[in-house]
Amino acid sequence: MIYHCNRLTLKTGVTQEQLDEALDSLRNQGRVIPSVRHFSVGRDHGGEYEWGAVFALDDLDGYWEYLIHPAHLHTDRIGLPLVDKFVSFDITDEPDPDMGARIAALHRRRYDGMPEIMKLVSGLGEYRGSAAPGKHAH
Image (cartoon, rainbow, N blue to C red; front, top):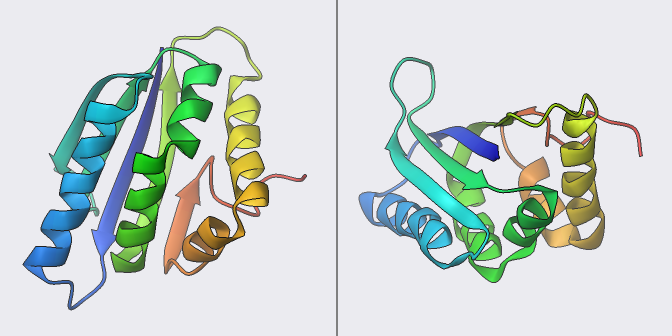
């Protein structure tokens, strides 16, 4: 099982309506992407971030399905322009020591094939984590 986690803080000036639309879109990902087994979207407590989301995925094939699913892409398009600070990370019980590199490779593949998503991600004030562009060599 892979738990894909996101933590974020919004830009100043984001309206309640924009926030609600982005959170609804994140929740929709959990409902409609077939590879998502469980999910949670809501307030982030205990750190410097305001909001968070966790999506449980069975394996790398399911992770790829999640990354390229239209529901996820919709969230990227409406949500990333609202975000100032973002971190994504993955927790897995998979014993493969190369799992982190394999997950990062999926993200690079998505960015390479979807330049508009790469542009949105590059526009964030801060982006940390295994999926952050420029963190791994191609």
